[in-house]
Image (cartoon, rainbow, N blue to C red):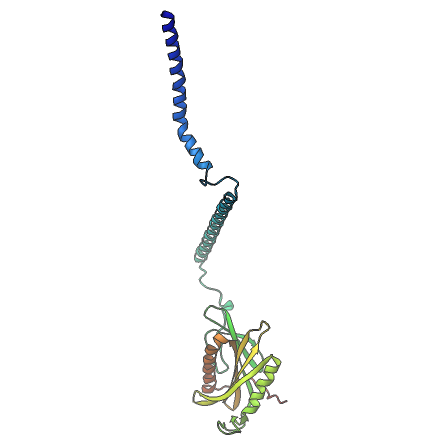
Length: 271
C-alpha cells in the first residue's frame, strides 16, 4: 500500500510538472503565432506562387512604387517652394523690387505714335516694314503682324464700279501684291472686298497659307490711305485667333488714319 501510494504521488507530481510549462508556453506564444500568421498570409485563400498570387504581388509592388514616386514629387515640390521663398526673402532684404530699367521691355509703338494692341511685341524692323509678334493671354505666340508703306496715293478712292481704287491706286494692283506674296509663301487668296473702318474705305484681301506641319494659317491684308500714302497692315494667325487679330488690325488702321505721320517707304513692285 505504501509503495502504491508513493508511486501514485510521484506520477501526479510528474503530470502537474509537465502540464504547467506547456500551458505557460501556449499562453505566451499565442499572440506571437497570431501576429506571424497575419504578417505571413497577405492574401487569404490564395496559393503562394500561383498565378493569382503573382498578380496580387505585382499590383502591390506597383502601388508601393507609385506611393514612393508621389512622396519624391511632394518632397521636390516642397524643396522648390522653400528655395523660391528663400530667394524672395533675400531679394526683399537686398531691396530688389523689380528688374533694372535697362532690361525692361519697351512698349510697342505703331508708326502713328499710338501704343500697339496688347500682346503685340516688336519683332524685326526694316526701312520698309515694322513687324510684331502677337501673343495670347497665356503668353504663347498666336500669330504675327506687320505694317508697311506700299506706295504714294495718286488720287481719290473709288469704291464702286469695275475700276475700284484706293487713294487712286487700283485695287487689282494691291490684290496682285498679295497674290505674289502668297506664291512665295505657299499660300493662296480666298477673297477680297472693301469696307469702312474709321469712316474711311479700306481694301481687304483674305488669304490662307500652309505651314510645314500642314496646319492652315489665316492671312489678312488691310490697305488704307493716310497722309498721301497707301499703308498695308498684314496679319497672320491660326484660325482660332484670326477674329481677334482682325479686330486689332482694324484698330491699327484707325490709328494710322487718325494720326498720319511720315513713315518708311516701300516702292510698289510690278511684275
